[in-house]
Length: 382
Image 1 (tube, one colour):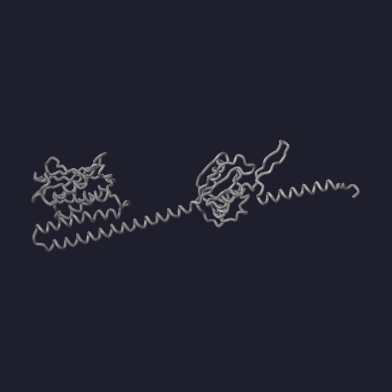
Image 2 (cartoon, rainbow, N blue to C red; image 1 turned 120 degrees about the horizontal axis):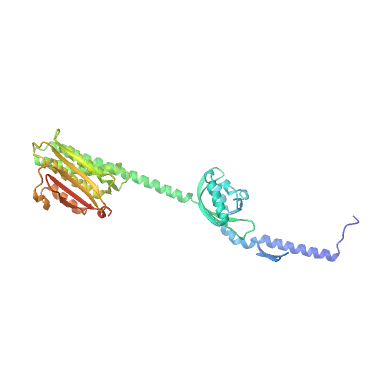
């Protein structure tokens, strides 16, 4: 006890004044009244920025709609805002010191580690999947940037929640799928209704004694069947706006040939079509009706009674600039006046439909009849 040092009243007063000064400094630091302090060190006076100066920025970070973090190079979290804490389902105070990698879905951790390494060296950005405390996952985008002048944090990160936009996208996809389903159902019902009309015409034709009237009704039946086949193929197709014209015209030609040929008839149909040529529904309907008329004319008029063997051929191909549709037969040929656009109602319809879709119609050399329809590719793309 006798060796204890005693302070003079002057020294005691100096220490008390110094304590009061330090208490005032601590109060200023706690309230944010001080923005910076100057400390004399062995290398001279140094200026240190205080948290009070960061207060407006912290308010901004805490109210932003993205997650914000400061990290060490290995991904250890020094700070995160409340939005990021909400994303991972943990309180903010439980996230300090944890590794960001622990909050990422296992499948994305290697990618996240690579992003951290690149971010510490400069900057990086990429998609990750966050995994919350309850095991739920949500897609996110993380942007990392190095902090060169900081003494503790090596980088900052901004994490954007993508679950909202993806949910909207999922709803749009579901709505689109529903509309596609409804449109397919519309095509299916239109096809069924047209088939009903075709069946009614067939029944009506059976009770007509006049052969010319019966033939006209039968022609109308085939035209309606051509329309029904369009809707049937669209119902079965992946696309609801375009149709494979090769497959469609082959089905049309086969349907007309079967409906008009007498059982045991020597007339046969040969098809040579290239599949995968897609055109829109309006052009398909026009070409379907054209082929219906041409095949019908060949079956009914090209082969008089007693013909030993008759062949009708359908060819569909496309080069760089033109779609070619050709219907030919080895029959007796077509009257010359047909070339000028005259003749039956069916041939008048063919000429009119060609003009409608911007196609040209020409007749090949005999024997028999060859009709060639050429549709420019530019018209198909319109």
